[in-house]
Amino acid sequence: MAQASAQTNAATVAITVDAKPTRRFQWYQVLIYVLVVFFTLTSIGPFVFSFFSSFKTLQHILDFPPSLLPNPWTLGNYQEILSGGVFSRWLLNSGIYAFGTALLNVMFSAMAGYALSRMHFPGRNIIFILTLSVMMIPLPITLIPKYLVMNDFHLVNTYFALLLPMMAQPFSVFLMVQFMKGLPKELEESARIDGASRWRTFYQIILPLVKPALIAVIILSFQGAWNDFLWPLLVTNSQNMYTLPVGLFQFKTDHYTEYNLLIAGSMFNAIPILVLFFIFQRYFMGSAVGSAVKG
Amino acid sequence: MASQPSTSSITSAQELAKTARRERRPDKGWRAGETLSAYLFLAPYLFVLVVFFLVVTIYGVGLSLFKVDIGFTTPEFVGLHYYQLLFQQLSDVTDSDFWISMINIIKYTFFDVIGVTFFALVLAVLLHNLAFLKGAFRTIFYLPAVTSSVAVSLIFIWLYAPQGGINYLLSVMHIPGPDWLNDPAWALTALIIMNIWATAATFMIYFLAALQDIPQELIEAAEVDGAGRIAAFMNITLPLLRPAIFLVVALATIGAFQMFDQAKFMTNGGPLRSTLTPLLEIYNKGFGDNQFGYAAAMSVILFVVIFLFTMVQRRLIDTES
Image 1 (tube, one colour):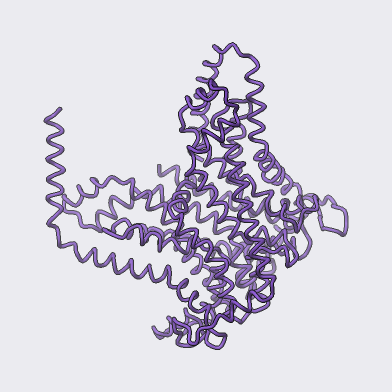
Image 2 (cartoon, rainbow over the protein chains, first blue to last red):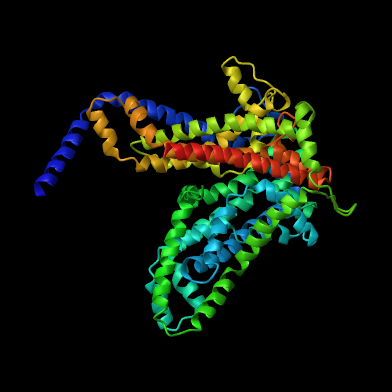
């Protein structure tokens, strides 16, 4: 036994020792870094270029050859965008849609996830299997009837139309179930012996233990709603109910060739998400992989 | 999908263990109380699940059998009329907006999926082989993936302008750039390039996770045996990435088939219907022409097409593994 492990140890040592002096692969590392720099430029280039260009005047926005830095600098694009007042209303609506979706969804999907992962009742398996299956229904088939349901209940052009379908998302529920399933059973048993109700057990014992999942769900659903274009396009039909993406579509139609304004407008949509991304990046990327499980 | 049977068997095993334990419990009323409180916990989610997923899916299929407009006439049963109409249009595809949009989306999906998978893999392999600053570059590469399709579309409307940034780069290489978004021959290509740029990083993450799961000893052993880096990659890494590649291809295909935002935002289906996508055509028929039944029939056909593509790919995955 000891001999065998000594042998494998020797083997690993041999490999590492053997690997060290292979300096002839250095060109390979150089090539990798050259490519990485190239893809860095293609990834952030458009953002950097358009960010600086949002301070250019209409006259210089299509300079050929283009310059990275504006000359002269101007805040005029931003002033013009915000002067109408309607743009800040779109920002507010987007904020309500995104924050509302994130908060409702994290609350309701945590509750559903708790019931599905830690309680025993008839119908549990059916609900869980339905959750898995509806994640595979592509959006187009539900789009028209979802709108007609909203129309039938006279909810079109209200915040309810935006928030109701988003307030408990199957994928978030699935994520919660996956997280909560792993917690030890004794948690509830000791809580019950101490006389805690189901609800207290849920929010005082279980929720603090699944904080990473809660943050992931908040961020995913905030991003989804903030970036959403199609659903708000369908259910909002007056300027003061538009979310930012729908408003930007209207804005684009009105200012088709005023690229300076279009780019400045896009910044309002892109920058909040980018800031959020820099703060919470591992949740963004972590949950993207988590979603692989649903496939 | 593959995880589904195993999950249910695990849960049913847990259930068995639980019921076995519960039989020792003298408290009879506990179960009803438990069921009630479970459904209270589930109530908001069940509302969404039933109304906005189940009812709406059945409603959508039923809707395609009716002539429905909002505010004019009462719905009228027309049976399979719209399906007949759509399939008759197959005889002259160039005359049918719907089938043109189908051809567009198949072209779009084909090139988009190849591009996305290729670049996602390249980015992941690059990151995986970085000795330092791995996290920083991963963040940078991921930036396009978090930005909304609307912001990206606005930026690219400007970059694709005849005098814009992309044509400037081409002119540096002495290539005359087209008027990307206004030329029927180039508009769809423009959207494909943009979408590959915007989504490759999303799928890069899947490949990174898969690369981390490959035991390093395998590759080291191959190198000890004298295999070059490229040979080791082609013969060991790539075959082991096969499941990840199929997953990415499947997810990217489903996503590409539902392309809407960019086509609506940048070109509105034009010029000359060259970027008309099925979802945009469904939107136009329903919300533009007030023909919701017709639009629902198109949705059902699109759903079936997506479903068939997914099934074919799933079959490929199954035979490989």
